[in-house]
Image 1: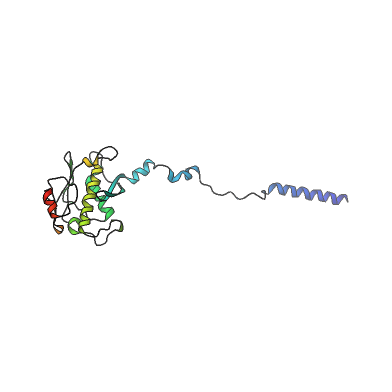
Image 2: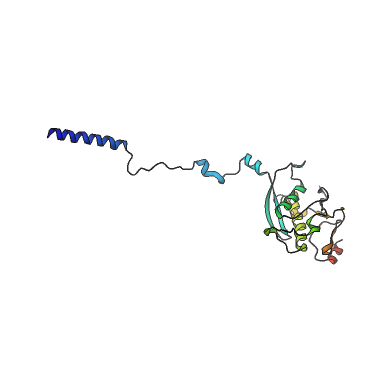
Length: 213
Protein backbone atom coordinates (compact mmCIF):
# COMPACT_ATOMS: atom_id res chain seq x y z
CA UNK A 1 0.00 0.00 0.00
CA UNK A 2 2.81 2.38 0.94
CA UNK A 3 4.54 1.55 -2.35
CA UNK A 4 1.36 2.41 -4.34
CA UNK A 5 1.00 5.78 -2.53
CA UNK A 6 4.68 6.58 -3.14
CA UNK A 7 4.27 5.70 -6.82
CA UNK A 8 1.19 7.96 -7.13
CA UNK A 9 3.05 10.85 -5.47
CA UNK A 10 5.98 10.42 -7.88
CA UNK A 11 3.72 10.37 -10.94
CA UNK A 12 1.91 13.51 -9.75
CA UNK A 13 5.24 15.28 -9.31
CA UNK A 14 6.33 14.35 -12.84
CA UNK A 15 3.03 15.57 -14.30
CA UNK A 16 3.35 18.79 -12.33
CA UNK A 17 6.80 19.49 -13.78
CA UNK A 18 5.56 18.75 -17.27
CA UNK A 19 2.65 21.16 -16.80
CA UNK A 20 5.03 23.93 -15.77
CA UNK A 21 7.03 23.51 -18.98
CA UNK A 22 4.02 23.51 -21.37
CA UNK A 23 2.37 26.78 -22.53
CA UNK A 24 -1.13 27.50 -21.25
CA UNK A 25 -3.94 26.10 -23.37
CA UNK A 26 -5.11 29.59 -24.35
CA UNK A 27 -1.69 30.76 -25.59
CA UNK A 28 -1.19 31.17 -29.36
CA UNK A 29 1.99 31.51 -31.46
CA UNK A 30 3.23 35.11 -31.74
CA UNK A 31 1.92 36.83 -34.87
CA UNK A 32 3.80 39.42 -37.00
CA UNK A 33 2.68 42.98 -36.26
CA UNK A 34 3.71 46.14 -38.14
CA UNK A 35 6.18 48.35 -36.38
CA UNK A 36 5.28 51.97 -35.70
CA UNK A 37 7.43 52.91 -38.67
CA UNK A 38 5.52 50.52 -40.97
CA UNK A 39 2.18 51.65 -39.61
CA UNK A 40 2.84 55.30 -40.39
CA UNK A 41 3.90 54.36 -43.96
CA UNK A 42 2.13 56.37 -46.62
CA UNK A 43 0.63 58.73 -44.09
CA UNK A 44 3.95 60.50 -43.58
CA UNK A 45 5.06 63.35 -45.80
CA UNK A 46 7.79 62.40 -48.32
CA UNK A 47 11.35 62.51 -47.07
CA UNK A 48 13.81 64.83 -48.84
CA UNK A 49 15.09 61.85 -50.80
CA UNK A 50 11.59 60.97 -51.96
CA UNK A 51 10.86 64.55 -52.99
CA UNK A 52 14.06 64.60 -55.02
CA UNK A 53 13.02 61.36 -56.72
CA UNK A 54 9.66 62.89 -57.60
CA UNK A 55 11.23 66.02 -59.06
CA UNK A 56 9.82 69.55 -59.15
CA UNK A 57 6.05 69.68 -59.41
CA UNK A 58 4.17 71.75 -61.97
CA UNK A 59 0.40 71.84 -62.39
CA UNK A 60 -0.92 71.43 -65.93
CA UNK A 61 -4.31 72.89 -66.84
CA UNK A 62 -5.94 70.94 -69.66
CA UNK A 63 -9.25 71.91 -71.24
CA UNK A 64 -10.92 75.03 -72.52
CA UNK A 65 -11.34 78.49 -71.05
CA UNK A 66 -13.61 78.18 -68.01
CA UNK A 67 -13.40 74.39 -67.90
CA UNK A 68 -9.93 73.11 -66.98
CA UNK A 69 -8.82 69.96 -65.23
CA UNK A 70 -5.64 70.12 -63.15
CA UNK A 71 -2.94 67.49 -63.62
CA UNK A 72 0.17 67.52 -61.41
CA UNK A 73 3.40 66.59 -63.22
CA UNK A 74 7.00 66.25 -62.02
CA UNK A 75 10.06 67.58 -63.82
CA UNK A 76 13.46 65.95 -63.27
CA UNK A 77 15.62 68.03 -65.60
CA UNK A 78 17.71 71.14 -65.13
CA UNK A 79 16.02 74.30 -63.88
CA UNK A 80 16.60 77.66 -65.53
CA UNK A 81 18.67 80.53 -64.12
CA UNK A 82 15.77 81.68 -61.94
CA UNK A 83 15.27 78.21 -60.44
CA UNK A 84 12.10 77.53 -62.44
CA UNK A 85 11.18 74.78 -64.86
CA UNK A 86 11.94 76.00 -68.41
CA UNK A 87 8.64 77.00 -70.08
CA UNK A 88 9.26 74.79 -73.11
CA UNK A 89 9.54 71.83 -70.73
CA UNK A 90 6.16 72.78 -69.24
CA UNK A 91 4.67 72.68 -72.74
CA UNK A 92 6.45 69.37 -73.29
CA UNK A 93 4.72 68.01 -70.19
CA UNK A 94 1.33 68.97 -71.67
CA UNK A 95 2.27 67.13 -74.88
CA UNK A 96 3.38 64.08 -72.91
CA UNK A 97 0.21 63.76 -70.85
CA UNK A 98 -2.25 64.50 -73.68
CA UNK A 99 -0.51 62.86 -76.63
CA UNK A 100 -0.76 66.07 -78.67
CA UNK A 101 2.21 67.12 -80.77
CA UNK A 102 3.30 70.51 -79.42
CA UNK A 103 6.55 70.98 -81.34
CA UNK A 104 7.95 74.50 -81.04
CA UNK A 105 9.64 76.55 -83.75
CA UNK A 106 11.78 78.45 -81.25
CA UNK A 107 12.56 78.86 -77.57
CA UNK A 108 9.72 80.24 -75.46
CA UNK A 109 10.41 83.92 -74.78
CA UNK A 110 9.57 85.27 -71.32
CA UNK A 111 9.89 88.75 -69.92
CA UNK A 112 8.02 91.75 -68.57
CA UNK A 113 5.90 91.85 -71.73
CA UNK A 114 4.62 88.35 -71.12
CA UNK A 115 5.30 84.95 -72.70
CA UNK A 116 5.65 84.27 -76.43
CA UNK A 117 5.23 80.78 -77.87
CA UNK A 118 6.01 79.94 -81.51
CA UNK A 119 4.60 76.63 -82.75
CA UNK A 120 6.37 74.54 -85.39
CA UNK A 121 4.62 73.46 -88.58
CA UNK A 122 4.82 69.85 -87.33
CA UNK A 123 2.63 70.58 -84.30
CA UNK A 124 -0.91 69.26 -83.96
CA UNK A 125 -2.23 72.76 -84.67
CA UNK A 126 -1.34 72.05 -88.31
CA UNK A 127 -1.41 68.24 -88.49
CA UNK A 128 -4.65 67.70 -86.56
CA UNK A 129 -5.54 65.20 -83.80
CA UNK A 130 -3.29 62.16 -83.33
CA UNK A 131 -4.43 58.94 -85.02
CA UNK A 132 -4.73 57.23 -81.64
CA UNK A 133 -6.18 59.56 -79.02
CA UNK A 134 -6.11 59.16 -75.26
CA UNK A 135 -9.64 58.75 -73.94
CA UNK A 136 -9.25 61.46 -71.29
CA UNK A 137 -8.18 64.00 -73.94
CA UNK A 138 -10.33 62.94 -76.87
CA UNK A 139 -11.32 65.71 -79.31
CA UNK A 140 -13.83 65.47 -82.12
CA UNK A 141 -12.17 67.75 -84.67
CA UNK A 142 -9.36 70.21 -85.37
CA UNK A 143 -11.38 73.12 -84.04
CA UNK A 144 -11.79 71.54 -80.62
CA UNK A 145 -8.16 70.38 -80.63
CA UNK A 146 -6.72 73.78 -81.54
CA UNK A 147 -8.86 75.52 -78.96
CA UNK A 148 -7.84 73.04 -76.25
CA UNK A 149 -4.16 73.38 -77.14
CA UNK A 150 -4.06 77.17 -77.04
CA UNK A 151 -6.30 77.54 -73.99
CA UNK A 152 -4.38 74.84 -72.08
CA UNK A 153 -0.94 76.25 -72.94
CA UNK A 154 -2.05 79.76 -72.04
CA UNK A 155 -3.57 78.81 -68.68
CA UNK A 156 -0.70 76.52 -67.70
CA UNK A 157 1.99 79.09 -68.55
CA UNK A 158 0.09 81.84 -66.74
CA UNK A 159 -0.02 79.74 -63.56
CA UNK A 160 3.61 78.68 -64.09
CA UNK A 161 4.63 82.36 -64.20
CA UNK A 162 2.37 83.55 -61.38
CA UNK A 163 1.44 81.10 -58.63
CA UNK A 164 -2.36 81.41 -58.17
CA UNK A 165 -1.82 81.45 -54.37
CA UNK A 166 0.64 84.34 -54.57
CA UNK A 167 -0.19 86.35 -57.67
CA UNK A 168 -2.66 86.94 -60.48
CA UNK A 169 -2.08 84.52 -63.36
CA UNK A 170 -4.65 86.31 -65.52
CA UNK A 171 -2.35 89.34 -65.51
CA UNK A 172 0.30 87.42 -67.47
CA UNK A 173 -0.02 87.98 -71.23
CA UNK A 174 0.60 85.01 -73.52
CA UNK A 175 1.34 85.52 -77.21
CA UNK A 176 1.11 82.82 -79.89
CA UNK A 177 3.02 82.83 -83.18
CA UNK A 178 3.36 80.62 -86.23
CA UNK A 179 6.54 78.88 -87.40
CA UNK A 180 7.89 82.10 -88.96
CA UNK A 181 7.29 84.18 -85.84
CA UNK A 182 4.29 85.94 -87.40
CA UNK A 183 0.58 85.31 -87.01
CA UNK A 184 -0.55 81.78 -86.15
CA UNK A 185 -2.57 80.90 -89.25
CA UNK A 186 -4.86 77.88 -88.89
CA UNK A 187 -5.73 77.60 -92.55
CA UNK A 188 -7.96 74.53 -92.27
CA UNK A 189 -10.22 76.44 -89.88
CA UNK A 190 -10.00 79.80 -91.63
CA UNK A 191 -8.78 81.29 -88.34
CA UNK A 192 -5.78 83.51 -87.64
CA UNK A 193 -4.39 84.16 -84.18
CA UNK A 194 -2.74 87.56 -84.12
CA UNK A 195 0.92 87.66 -83.10
CA UNK A 196 0.68 91.35 -82.26
CA UNK A 197 -1.88 91.00 -79.49
CA UNK A 198 -2.04 88.75 -76.40
CA UNK A 199 -4.20 85.67 -76.79
CA UNK A 200 -7.50 85.84 -74.90
CA UNK A 201 -10.12 83.46 -76.28
CA UNK A 202 -10.24 81.18 -79.29
CA UNK A 203 -12.05 82.80 -82.25
CA UNK A 204 -15.22 81.21 -83.54
CA UNK A 205 -14.86 82.43 -87.11
CA UNK A 206 -12.49 84.08 -89.58
CA UNK A 207 -14.49 87.31 -89.30
CA UNK A 208 -13.84 87.40 -85.56
CA UNK A 209 -10.10 87.00 -86.08
CA UNK A 210 -10.04 89.93 -88.47
CA UNK A 211 -11.56 92.15 -85.79
CA UNK A 212 -8.92 90.94 -83.32
CA UNK A 213 -6.01 91.62 -85.63
